[in-house]
Image (tube, rainbow, N blue to C red; front, side, top):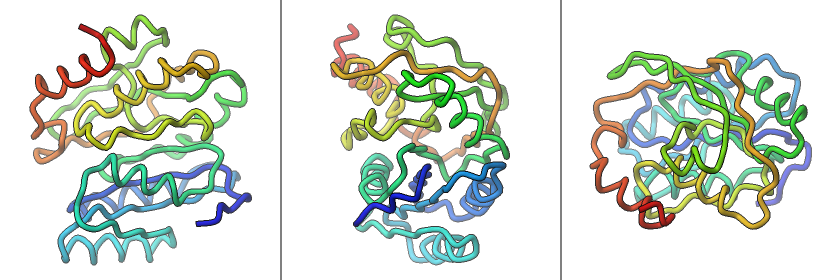
Length: 228
């Protein structure tokens, strides 16, 4: 796919069998307080027929790109597919069950303007659903990110700094990505933390963060990045 050079920000949303949440997520991203050129790409990761119809309908209602990916793989495969089809110089990997505040994109994009050496910018967020609390992130350092993850997937990343998601990682994929960027030889400066709550993250009973074994996922990341 040929890149559209007029696009500044690409928002990529992988989804699998959760059409009931996708509407609010896409609606929130279409109603951003920004004048920047934004493209929204919904990657349908092998949803069943009913959800596929629902996802396609949402994409048509809001006039966003709909890309079916079949057969079902996992969210990281879908994210990488969406990235390859995207055009923006700045990338956001959104979740279909998140609702983004109206200043989400502009706040993170402005932060990267103000911190030109930062490879990405990230913020706080509100957990809803199975968990109810505000996640307050923290200032970045290599030592801190190697201790534990405190950055959600929904950050804004400069395109040249994005190494791709590991398709074998199903849980803690955000931590794996930030560690990979941190270990990169051509990493720029420190990522920038925006100390503001910019979106809601709805935790479902069937989400990967609930259904996938945490200890198994943790050991995989620790082994891959020599954290033991």
